[in-house]
Image (cartoon, rainbow, N blue to C red; front, side, top):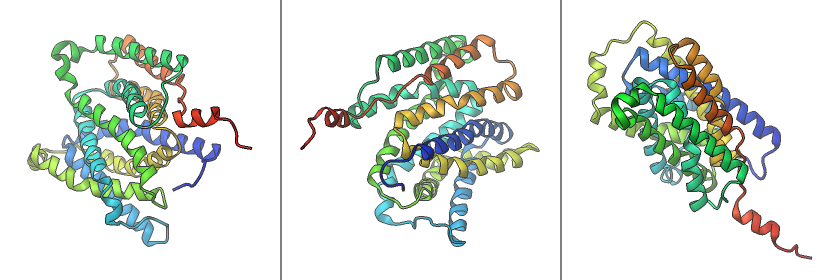
Length: 313
């Protein structure tokens, strides 16, 4: 992992790389779920493909981190949350549209901000940032009030979305803690640990939630191979870019980067997948995204105290 302060160039490149991968991953996963509705199997293929890829590049000379038990143990809690979140995300995508997922993602900073404030030494946001988050909440409220699924089924329509939301928020913050405490030498290190160690809990989810029974009876459509394969490729790319980006910026800023790059995701989804979205619902979603772009990361309390302390002569 990078030592010391990251250069501005590294931060910009990591954010752009992550944004490209993240903006396309949600759409491709939605198409994968539309063509093959067995979340655990798709997730297993993605995790396995990424693990094999890392061992393959290691075999040809690319520097990667070896799997060590002393490093694997701290990842135990994280990978359970990760496996649960990607499963819940797939279930949510199978039942809801992409726009609903993005609105909930836009609200993730509320949860990560609270966690960072109480447990990670981060200060509360400035008045400008608080206003931006208030606008995010307003846009989310408008979107939910226009959602036909919510009107028909109430909060139960968002069951899998909510499961994914809370697991995602935990990932964002605990993942940052992992990077600061478990010092691996390369960005591929946490990608390998996350993907390889998430395979057992994903198998458990597939078994207990009945996905492997569906596997025997579900017929994939003609485009399933294309979309599932593409999701595996993007899974490798987002694994690397996500950990790289997370290592260079705060958990809340990382979450908001994911929110802002969803503007492209919304455009692609409206044009090619959910062509019946109402203009008001899309407008509410755009409010969430644009408001999120005005958020500024608050400093750590320890940094503020240090800055105010008199300099030593």
